[in-house]
Image (cartoon, rainbow, N blue to C red; front, side, top):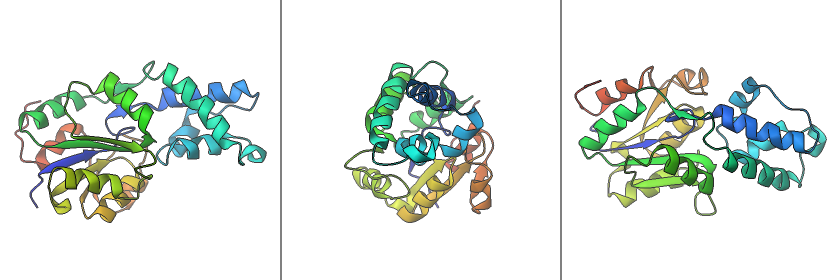
Length: 219
C-alpha cells in the first residue's frame, strides 16, 4: 500500500517528555501535600490524556469531581516547565527533514490538551510543517476516537488507507485501525510491550520509518 501521508503521536513517539510531565504532576501533588510517584508510574499512566494521568496519581479518596481543579494546577506547572528535560528522540529531526524534502504531508495527533500540544510543537517542532496539529479539545475527543486522524485525511484529500499512523501506544494502534489507516508501532516510547503484542509492524529506530515511504536513507 502506497503511503501518501503520515500521522505522528507526540509523547513517546517524537519527543521524550515523561520527566517534565512527571515533575509537573508531582509538584501539583506536593502543593496539596499528597504522596508523589516515581517516574515508572507515569510511564504507565501516560497516553490516555492529562485528566486520566492526574486522576491516577491522586489518592483514591480524591478521585472525584474535584479532579478538574487538580488538572488545572498540573497544567499550569507543566506549561511553566514544558521544556526543562524534554527532548526529541535521536534521529527524529533528520527523519522529519527527509520526509519534508519529499513533500509528504504530516500531522500530529495526541491526547495531550490542545493548548499544551501547541506549546510543545512550537518549542520543539517548529522547524517542520505539519498540516494538522491535533490535541484533545472540545472539537477532537481523545484517541482511540479517530475523528482527529480522519480530519487530517480529509483536509489533505487523502484516502485513510494511504495514511501511516505512527505511535508508541496501544491507543495509537487502535486509532489507526478505527480510522482505516496503517498502524506502525515504535519501540522507543512508553507503550511497549503492549503495542508489539497487538500484532502490528514495529520499528526500533526512527530511520526505519523511511523504509515505509520509499525515501532513500541518508542518515
